Length: 84
Image 1 (cartoon, rainbow, N blue to C red):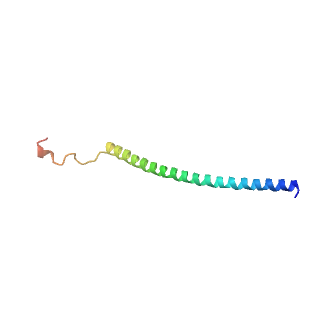
Image 2: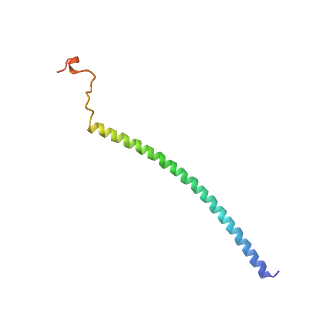
């Protein structure tokens, strides 16, 4: 074999090994990114639940404060305890 052919085969084999290694690294990195994205999605879902409960609490608070219920605050009629 000529030295040029050996050099071409060596460079080709080296590039092939490099490409295989890069693709394996990229594939592993993509798997890790997918795991991180799933974790972030879970955190976002948890925050959505917390925000929804906080919103319901605030809306309930202001609805009761602005529009109080029309029922009496006491269970007995005023005549029962001597009030006018």
